[in-house]
Length: 117
Length: 113
View 1: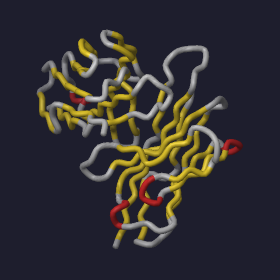
View 2: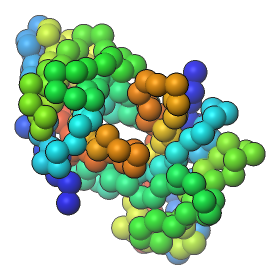
View 3: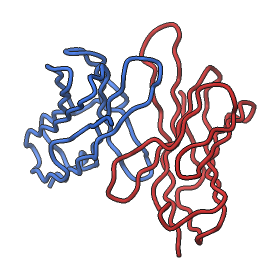
View 4: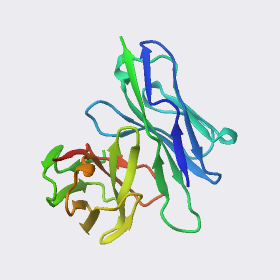
């Protein structure tokens, strides 16, 4: 079965530190990739997405992610985190079924990031 | 902006009660979804609907049912609530086009005692 793995469940950083959150998926076909973020008390919102083209994708608030097809990875990065980046981050993959059927969005377990001032 | 609203932010119910969670979206999206979010498990799909009166089971449909009588509204029903259904429930919607981006509501934190 298709799955999405996020390597770190909890990450603690100081402000200005660099961030990299790992995401790997298990599916050999065409995929669309997403990172969602959930700030404390807020709804889940899209951070960035990859569909095709340049594998380095830039999102909101200075985040970026790189799709490496050979590694089945879509890691999220930010060069310098801020206290306001404290949130839970979810990697998600759409598995495209060309033969019909629903294109399912599969989520990872999430990574809780705490940024200390 | 797409807006997805859910009827309650917090809900406390007793074991055995019938529970209705309502979700409304204002962007004329064809597809709507119900997920539950649990720590360490991410989001798991309960049911989705690709059109009015159409529904499909997700990964964890047991103990739940859904209703979609109007395009903008998607209801999740817990026929007989149990303590293991204590969770955060998220509704989402998306267009049937190729963007695949889902828009989420604020969530309902349900506690079953």
